[in-house]
Length: 126
Image (tube, rainbow, N blue to C red; front, side, top):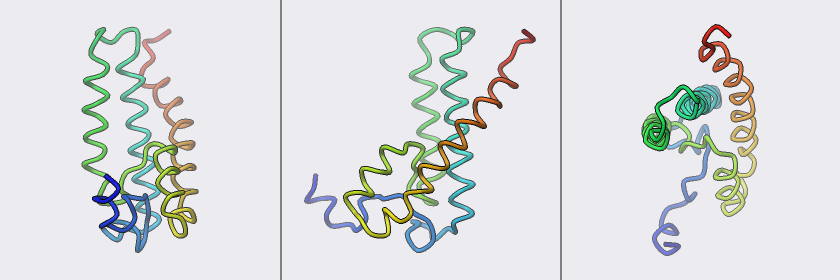
């Protein structure tokens, strides 16, 4: 695997600006990561809610994550997971570490927003 990946610079590190696969700006990267992580969190909370049909959560979560990747790979190489971003950034070093802050801050913002949004949308009047 290393021999295959070593032929491509960056190991799919998350980035913005000149390190974005599509050359997207910092603003675009922030919006993408916050919205995609927020939607993923709402997907997880909804699929695992006690009111959701039992046994379907893995399908819903897997399909949701697939869609998120299809949308955001061209923008930032898709993070939605600080551990994934950190591991690759530590290996690549330099620019990847200097842009890593975004891929920690966006999920934190999304987690706070997601909790409020799901509580508002998912409440059943209780």
